[in-house]
Each structure stands twice: as C-alpha cells, then as structure tokens.
Image (cartoon, rainbow over all chains, first blue to last red; front, side):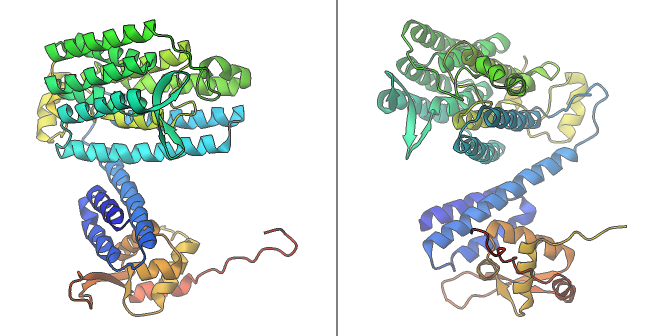
Length: 369
Length: 98
C-alpha cells in the first residue's frame, strides 16, 4: 500500500504544472511522515485529484491564452478540446436519459466514475504524448494481446467472451483500448503497431464482437483512404477478415437494459430521453465533422465512433456514452488523442505562425491528407 | 469594486487550525481541520499567492528524512482568520431521524 501511495504521488507530481512543482514536492515529503498506510493512501489520492484538476485548469488557461484567431476560423480551433466538450455533453445527456428511464442510481454513478477515470487517463496519455512516451508499436502489441487474452480467458456470457470481471465491476477492454490503438497507429503507422492491430483483430474474431471488429475495419479503411501505406493496408485486410468472421458467427447476446437498443427504445421512455440519446450519439462524431479538412487522426476517430454508434443502432451492442457503459466513456476519452490540439488550416496560412509558436503537435498528424 | 468571496466552512477550519500559531505541517492541518489533501493544498497555494500565508522548507528531526514544507499565517492571514471564524455544524433538529 505504501508503494501504491508513493506511485500515486509520483503521478500527481508529474501532472502538476511546473509552477506548482514546489507544492508537489511538499506533498511528497509530507507523505513520508504519515504513519498509517491507509491514511497515506487517502493523502496520496487526494493529491492526485488536486493535481489532475490543476493540470486540467492549466491546460484550459493555455487554450484561452492562444494566439489570435486566423480570419477564416470561426469554429473553435482545438479539436481535442471540442472532443472533450462533446464527451462531457454526451455523458451528461446519457445521465439524463438513464434518469428518465429509471436506471438504478449505481449505473449513473458508474458512468460518472468512468468519466473521472477517463479524464485522468486522458491527462496521463496526453502527458506521455507530450513527453514522447507513447511508442505505438509496443503499446499496440500489448493492448492487442489484452484483447486476445480476453477472448480466451475473459468473462463469458451466452457463448461470447468480451469482458473482464474486475472484482464485480465488469469492463469491456476492447471498447476501452481499441480506439486508442487506432489512434496510436494513425500517429505512427509502422509494422509493429499494425501487428498489434492484427492481434486485436484475431481477438475480436474469437470473442466474437461485430461492433468492435467493424469499428476497427472502419477506422483502418478511413486511414487507408486518407493516408495509404502498406502496414495500414495489411491491418485493414486483417480487420476486414475479422469482421467477416464475426458476421458469419452467431452472436446470441441478448439486449441489456440501459446498454443496448437504446436508440430504439429511448423515445418510448420519454421524448426528452429520445432527444438526449440521439443528440448524444451525434455529438460523439461531431469533433470529426466540425472542422475544415480534418486530418487523418480525426477521420479515423470519426469512422471508428460512427461504426460503434451504427453497430449499437443495428444490433445488441453498447450505445456509447449515452447508455450505461463505463468502458465506452473511458475509451472515448482516451481516443481523443487522435484529435490534434489545433484544427488543420491551409498550409500557406498556417505555416509561419505555427512554427513561430512552437506548436507541439506531432508532425504525423499533419502529414499530407 | 472587487468583492472578497465568502470563505467556505472547510477553508475556515483550515484557517482556524493555522491561527493556533507556529509553523504547521500539511498532514497535521489535514487531520486537525478534517480536510482532504486535495482540498488543503489548493487553499494553501491560494493564500500564499494572496499574501495570507508564509511557507518555507524546514529540516526534519529524523536524520534520514527529507525537509518538510511548513506553513504559518502572515499578519494579513491572522486578520483574515479573525474575520472568518470556523463555523460549528448545526445540530440535527430534535425529533428528526439521524
């Protein structure tokens, strides 16, 4: 428990903006003087929440203090921030739907908890991204192996194995990590990262999961169309084969209340619930649609989440964010790294000021589309 | 005109703990004011920036232990604490179930 406390405080210190580093050091020193391990853990958790809030606040402040808007851009120019707002709004609309539909309070709390976890996860992934600690190849291989392991050893229901039971909390790992894997691959489409996607595709075929296999294929198809490459093409072939296998295999999963078939049933509950579900679903894809000439990352993001929403409309698959599913909320927030922090603008207009300001966006996302 | 924001009950408790005098440690303040570390540090940071709090590093007594950050109210902070005494929670009304 002491190690966990120390680890949480290290994460907290890493999240804190540089101007608060002294305070992070103070909290870390204080931890050593707390005699009782549970109290240490509570202290470290509190510091982590504070650091996450401070990091988010510093980030929002930076966004507000950006350079003057170019004349053509009337829309918000930060796709990732727009995605974050859409995620918050869609989750809120989902809570409204579940409240109107009479879902158990624990469902609402789990979605709120997932939102907090997802925000924390996004902060960590963004930090790792800034520091260049997001190696697409090894991460995709590890996450692909996780999806495959779930297919073999995961929790099973009605002959389908898609879930992990974490001490009573059932999560769907593919929904959490697959959009992130697509994001990592879109940033650095190498052979190792493509191998990770192939392993994931195998896992999805074995589970079987039409929705996620379809999302993988849709995301890769979008990537191949906007930025062709051999690794992407190979991964697309694998994902297409996995999707075909899932279409051929029977999927007897019944519809789960507040999770599946929501797009059909929400209007029966209440007109407001129906509007909330439809608006929330549209918001999921909005970050990819709102911007002029979206980059490859945004196109993959839009294709992936459009496929997941479409699958939810057509079959018994989770309706992301607007239904009861913490995995989808965390997965959506993590996948926001697919979106650049600044919208693409015509090169002639963008080139000089972007370089002068040291825009930290990796060049892969701005490669020719 | 800038109007001072009313302090929360938690902030008042931390101020009261600090107003007892002397240099105080972060964890001691957490315990005494019954406040979470995630609430305490933003308050300390704000008060230091506003000139209500002094903070400095002090060597700890144990040989192998690192220095600790300690906190004390400035004269302006003492006035702030006097103007914002800790609020005792209202007792539950008689006859109402707990």
